[in-house]
Length: 156
Image 1 (tube, helix red, strand yellow):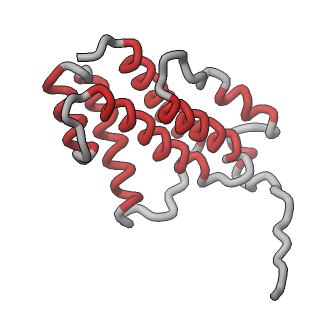
Image 2 (tube, one colour; image 1 turned 45 degrees about the vertical axis):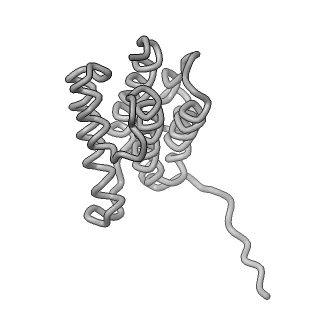
């Protein structure tokens, strides 16, 4: 059996387009703080999305994974907030959330856009998509914001 030794991480060659050094990645995600009151399952997913963004310094594609991952946190909270959510697909949860007032029109619109990106990746329509951090951070921020808003709102 051969043992493969992986090299230590080195900055992705594209990293210099958005930051000068790894320490700058901390500033990029500094506002992505998981608020109190978020269920631990969703909080863990949001923290992972934030760390994926930071690590995109070493693997550019992690920024895309961070966006897709952050949507999981929103779905976790929606399943908790929408009565009878069960195993409904995210599209149905978004629609039901908008119809029942759990989601605002703005939230539903953003989530549906993110859902389409996620589905394109998950179903092989878009492959190897690299979303630059400048594009990914606002999308992950939107997931953080929607989770925060949903968790602050009274349950229906």
